[in-house]
Image (tube, rainbow over all chains, first blue to last red; front, side, top):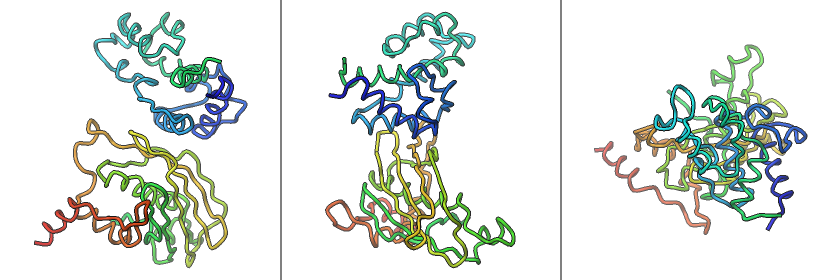
Length: 130
Length: 176
């Protein structure tokens, strides 16, 4: 079982390869879109690299819940509704949604996820606690 | 429209690796005309060769049932020019296969010399995006035969690959 630090290091390596960024840029607080420049097609690449690096299966919707963000039931006037936010929290317990919840614009969602969120997600899939 | 970016496969091990060759000829318009006066095989078309070699390697894993599309070039580096008369050797390894697609690593060599290297991401186009087959089956089989895929293709036990029956059926329908 890897440690949290080992998980982070593998995630950093995957993001360096997928996004062509420098290792120093991949800090725990860095956002995938805003800081590391990830575009939508990069998320497929990132998922593949995580799956390979950790030997896990990652349903895309678990990490990138596009289905919720495009569902009229959960979105009104470009904002995620309270029900939608509740659904996101259920789907993504590893992500800190507090800032997003204050101003839940759909277009801002992509800029929410950080490297740390990725680490927490993978750790939760692997059962890593230390 | 012609879209052949390799001349033929020289090795094809199902789900593992494939090698192909591309002979650069001055008779090809893209070689002659891209940089007038400085004929060469531009790297973008080498990437197309990587994509065809790797895309078919990935597609064959599921008997070409998935619609494999090139989604992203994660990285690409080219170290020298390929000129008319050169013989490019492409080598591709399948790095990972996932439910949504896969990743490959590819290199091109001029003799012993490393010419280029790249990593490519492929996605399977879902039914929600594309409702039909991307290639007409008989035409697709014709391309695979031209590339010699079934001449050199083996499974991981070294047994020759079989042509999917639906392709043979489609070919037979065209012939009659």
